[in-house]
Image 1 (cartoon, rainbow, N blue to C red):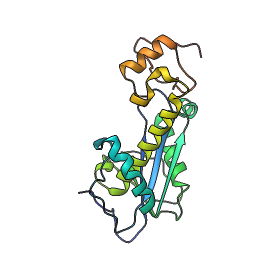
Image 2: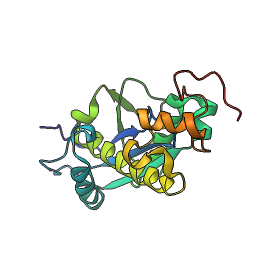
Image 3: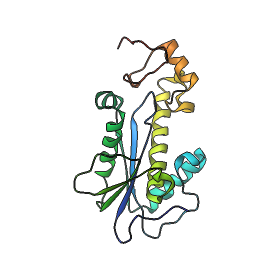
Length: 199
């Protein structure tokens, strides 16, 4: 059973990201403030849920949350500042959209760039511990999956509806055969034998 909050009596926003390990596409992050009485037996770390379950939970979270938001950082930003900082930037962009403003942030992971004026607590594997982080993981994952499916309509040969930009064999074979798209992360090792691409 996931925990409802770190400390009672304050507005806590759970934050998580999706897409850090991908070869292509933006990194997405979500921030969610759940009401004190929120309960849902299906809610869990998005990686432990089926795609059908994640999409079933998304409207529940959106309708019942006090506030929620999704932020992104582009492939260009990832290449410029690195994926870890870009993940934090996407989280900051999500947090900045929350109304009301949270009094505490619960961040999935062990590192975070402090958000001005709001204290934070990092929680390793927090998406399997706190409801608000689990809810954020579901929003980040489903919105990113929608984004990758939309990109796939323009670049159908990279199997993005299936791999969502992650380094599967089919994705890497397509890069080897066709080269990269404008959405590939140029600072990542896109294929194991990679030496250089003509960007």
